Length: 169
Ligand code: GDP
Image 1 (cartoon, rainbow, N blue to C red):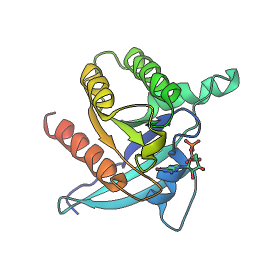
Image 2 (cartoon, protein in one colour):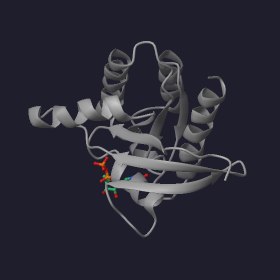
Image 3 (cartoon, rainbow, N blue to C red):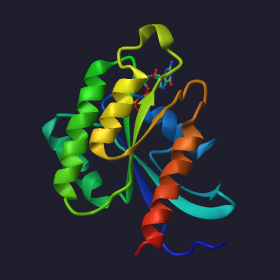
Image 4 (cartoon, rainbow, N blue to C red):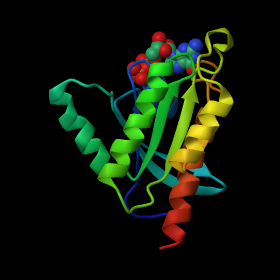
């Protein structure tokens, strides 16, 4: 394959219940574990990706875990649920924490509004999500892990951004 070397480490970040586990199982396919490495095909080129699923929590001991994720990721999928405004606000906080850990680096981030199948329970509009991503200077996508809608697009999108960054080095 064209890409050699260590796999891209993509971290799933977001409040509890937004769909990180659901994303990880779609990525993993049959093998459903917390840390999964896979070679995926994006734009006709193979990419090795390690997906790290982390739960976000304010509990102190788990801050260590969050800290580690902030340091080890090459790229981040920052998830919220469109049915949960608190998770949208949490995504903003996490973006600020990320920026603090990586002030100068152009770490690829995609803001992901998940559960877009739950139209009648929507609390965060598409335009709010898009506007937030513009402020964060990152890409935006709405997904439904339940319907398997746009989930692979999110994974492919993050690989494309990682390649752009790699190629500009
Ligand atoms: P996590 O805490 O971020 O890992 O969230 P989970 O992946 O465990 O998801 C929390 C709940 O939301 C579970 O009951 C999932 O089945 C459900 N869920 C996850 N993604 C979606 C989605 O896109 N649509 C719907 N309707 N439910 C979802």
